[in-house]
Length: 94
Image (tube, rainbow, N blue to C red; front, top):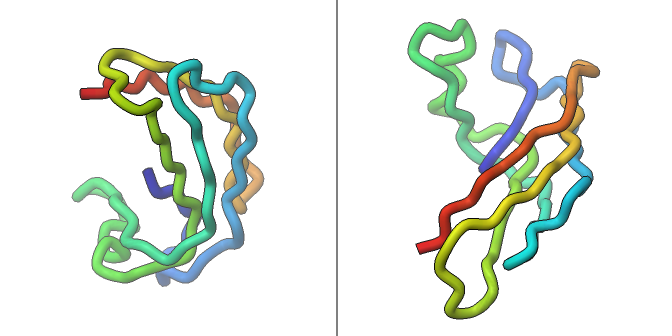
């Protein structure tokens, strides 16, 4: 997953940061600051940014070897504009 906070000209407002509140039981989560393509909905004023690589936070989950099933985690995510909060994720590992 990739998260970013952008100005209308597609420049970054600053870093997005995350902290683990509840770790996944059957895997691990890692974070990295990278440049990638955002995904804004077609009706978003920021949809034009979808074609440009921008800085943001990559959130990666890796399950235990040979695990198949469901895992969960809770993260606290803070965006560069000061907004943020707790996010609950349910992960389906196939």
